[in-house]
Length: 446
Image (tube, rainbow, N blue to C red):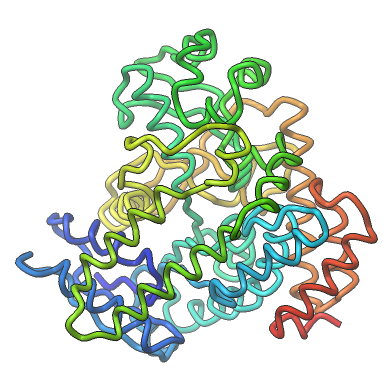
């Protein structure tokens, strides 16, 4: 089975390869094709993978290419992990937004819109190529903003476009372990959009364990989301929000933390990864050891500004465990390729899951997966406050898609202006002007 990774020179690719190395079952991935527009980055990651594979019998073969069509031909699965504009673009997204006093995080608010506007046209081109060159392939999208990009691709390849994220998995794992349950045996009642969802229940053997957590203040404040949001707010919600909802519920504090930081998250990652790729220019450098040390630093500083704003302190060691999105991806491929039925939280088309949204809207929800792909599970309706936020953000995503399709600058401004975290049409116009100056790739918006 052939797996193609787009953005194959990206820093997180070795996580995927590590999961593949551990898979010894029949029908596993035997060939990995790495595609990237940057040949030097491709070479660096190929070295890391080569060292990972040392001593592993029958490790999946790795091939690299900068030719997109060549990469896609014959693919069984395509992982899309591209970053249009690189980390320089992410840092610019943050900088432009913060200059206007609004959040610039890469998936939330103004930064997410800017990232989406320059990523959607590229993602659509990839989807069209897949439809032509590998019509039977499944596309597993890691590219942020994951829900938005998955919806853009699904318009061209339908349900074969599936988005994944490790945030719901991590949340469910933390809550299950806190309650003394085995994470793999728990059913997560989780629903929303990517980076905008709520865990409303955790069922084990038919019993919902979440009320016990919500009733215990000390237990609530002992794990990451409890420290971020506080016991009082979680008890008021009656649910555990995805960590990214901190940007909505505590927006002023989050913006203040970002503005007061020495460097934004994007700038930090840009500098950190630049050092890694520079070190990889040395043919004598220990590729995997260097990569792994860089990865550990990255994980330790995840959502650092939000934890600072909440006074949550450093991340606990158990919150930095591996087994995130790469394990979700592997389980998804197994379920489809081998008909090994699995339940996974995925970004898929809504169909009839949430009555407030149309059938083609991509949502994040538990899915039953088999050889025919993912099937969204039936979930209870969201409460009014959550429905309002989901519908508002989905409307913004639709404006981004419309702007990318039409090339309309006015529609792009509308997307900024309608977002709950952008508080003025005038600010939206200035954001559009700032992003147009920062990103030549947005010149298509006129």
